[in-house]
Image (tube, rainbow, N blue to C red; front, side, top):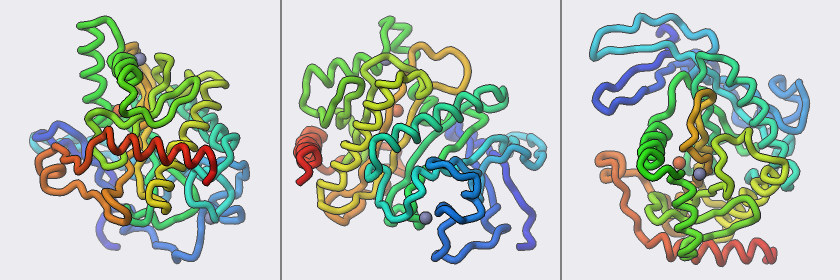
Length: 326
Ligand code: ZN
Ligand code: ZN
Ligand code: FE
C-alpha cells in the first residue's frame, strides 16, 4: 500500500514494443467475489441502458496519467494516456456468453461500440481502440456477468502494427487488399470455411495458431467497425452468435476463448486494411488448455497439434448442430 502509484508505458527496445505498467490493483481494495458490479443496482450501473460501457476500475491507461520523465535509453517511458472500458453486454447476470444473447442485443453492443469509437477518434492523442473478450475461468475471468473490454491506446498495438505493415506492402506490390485476397482464396478452397452469411465469412486460417482459431472477415472491403451498414451489423451479430455457440458444441461445454477485433486505427488513412475478428478457442481436447509455452512464448512460433482443415470440419459439424438446435 505504501508503494507509490505507477501508471506508465515502458518501451522495450529489444522487441520494439510498449509494455503497460500499472500497480493500481495494489492501491484499490478488492471486492468480495459475491458482489457483481455489472448487475442492475450496483453503483457502477446506475446510468441504466441495456448495454453499458463503464470505466475499468483497474485501468492500465487513464485520461489524466501521472507525468513521467521520458528517460534515457534503455529506460524509455511514456505517459499512459488512454482509456480502459468494460462493456457490460446485458443486464442479465446468469448467462454464459455473449452468444447466449439474442442477435438484436449483440447488434446493440456493436452499435454502442461504433458510437464510442467515433467519439474517441476526435481526441488526437488517442490512436487505437482494441475491443477484446476474454472468456472462461481457465483464463482468469472471474466475473461471469457477460462483458468484454476496450483498451484505447496512444499507440498501435504490436500485432495490429505487424498486420498493417504486411497489408501495406501487399497493397503496394499488387494494388489489392491482402485480406480480400485471403478471403477469395479461402472461399475458393472451402476446406477451412466454418460458416458464412451474406456479409461475413468465418474460417480457420490456413496458418491457425490456437487450437480452435476462427477468423471472421467482412465480404466487403471495410476498414472499421463504424463503417458497417445496418444489414452488415445484423449479419455480424448472426455470425458471432453462430460461431461462438459452435465453440460450445465441440465438447458440449463452454470453451475458454479470446476474441479480438482488428480494425484500422482511429484516425488516418489505411485503405489497405480490412477489419476482422479473431477468435482463439483454447481447448486442445476437452478440458485441456493449450498453453503458449516454451516454443510459443519463448520462441514466438506456434505448434499446432491437429490440422486447421480437420478443426474446420469439426466446427462445421458443430455449426450444423447449432443451426438445428440439437
Ligand atoms: Zn451480474
Ligand atoms: Zn479488403
Ligand atoms: Fe488480425
